[in-house]
Length: 411
Image (cartoon, rainbow, N blue to C red; front, side, top):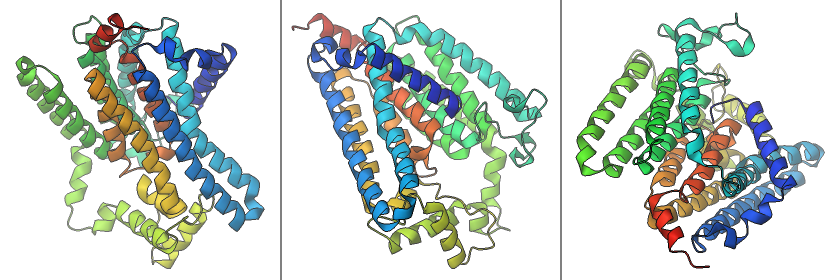
């Protein structure tokens, strides 16, 4: 969840090969093996149907691009195929693999301690990175590039390429680990889950990324106040105050630039320009967008046409909803809506049946994160999201409510 896309791709491919070689999908998709009546199987159906419908909208965009730009046929198919894979097929392989591993007696509790230790090591490395700029990915003597240095420290990215990418992934790790700690707070591994959440939050702060930190604090505080017993409410409030303090320490200097009246709003918040350009692209091409394959070329044309030719950073929208509307139109947005709808329905069902808001919190954080970043295009974040979903669908079988259902289960 916090490692580079190459590592994630290798692991996911290995899981897919293992699952296929063992024919594990036959075991997982058999309702008799899932127990807990047919509820869990229905969750898989909702996910599968949602991702299939989402892929259908992608295919509509693919066909439209093949018709309008037939010369780039192979390139168009490859790009759309990768996106469909990341937003659907990839996720289902991870979810099914985790279920098959569970049926072969793997349990999340087995790696809680190792996860906490790994995140502690990552936090230590990122601390060195923040103050000395170490970049061991490119050699033990390498340092982070100059543009990472701001307000006296480096923006840490761990082993990933960009601090913002790591920040959004850490956001999911913080929420997932805290939720597991709450769910199993009567078990010995709870302390390791809470430790993992704390270490992941420290990693998040070290990235210096403002929006993910704010979203994490708000959702984590809300979760703590509602999920813990009344006797622990005072500890929840103190915990939230500590998080706010650490968050202010991490992003205080960077947030001060938002109050600099000597600079225009577009200089203080460059995303305003990105949003303006991509909104205009959508208005000119509302149904199918400018084309997913041609989005960079078209965006550059719009930057110049709208008077932003002197702008150094002619970036993507940094907003998955505006980005999707610009390059894929309303049809593309329907694909995103379908993904969130299926995840949301599963989250609601888990809340109703297993009394756990964990997946709902994760989906909410993903929805909010999409307002500031093209997260559903990032392989790193999507891997973190699918792993979070996979673990949520495993731990509902381990929760106290699930245990009661298993004991009362009648074939």
